[in-house]
Image (cartoon, rainbow, N blue to C red; front, side):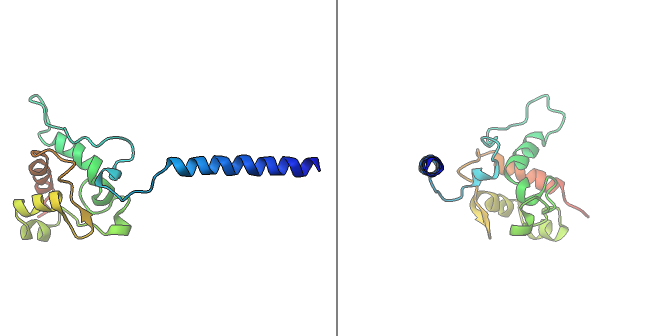
Length: 139
């Protein structure tokens, strides 16, 4: 009898805790900022005047927003690559086939399964990212 009361109490506590946990987490659509679960995306990154690497801000932004799919060096080998099969951004064929404007539009508006990031990026971010992508071109 005592065991039965304890079991009911435990079940009741677990059920109430579960209901509270479910209520606190709202279901929502996936958003581009979900790429960076560690914090807010560094959308305000800009290169400082004394910066030794002119692409440092672009690298930081790429690492936060793009590397989960495209990999840290843009080879299409990030942790999510198996699921989404992103482009190898250093591929000479891709580099030759797309203008800077087309690359920027892909970043801002999305392409295929890749979402657009226009709402998360400052105006100078897309051209910065395009310069970084161009620096990866393999011959």
